[in-house]
Length: 141
View 1 (cartoon, rainbow, N blue to C red):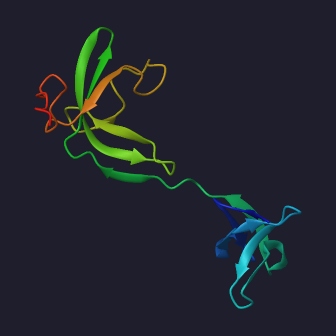
View 2: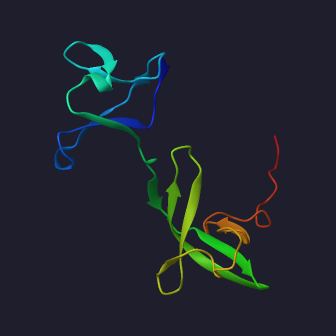
View 3: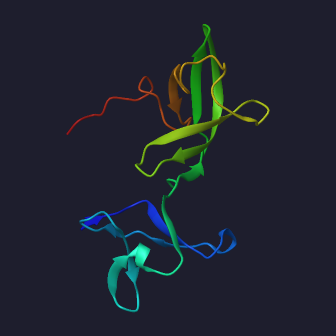
């Protein structure tokens, strides 16, 4: 048996009455296993009435507030600063800043000809955090 994550078994007599159960594991011969609560064991999803198919679940992203963070970018030799209005955090923990322009419209950094989003990001910072230049050396022990 191989543990499963990110899949569900779908059931229903017609498309208007679909139900689902999480796929908990894969059997040694590749069958999707779901929990049979009454029996207290895993069973093949295909053995249940009205089984239709197994589907991959979309990853669940989390959105947290931007909380005053700012991003600085260069584009065609010009610098611009945009507000981070939120952070989009993927299930693996990596995040992406969501920016707003001066009008409050959500956008990627300026310029639609960038090879990838945030390609020319200079820095992301919070105004309440001193920059490396502003920090005083510690006095030591």
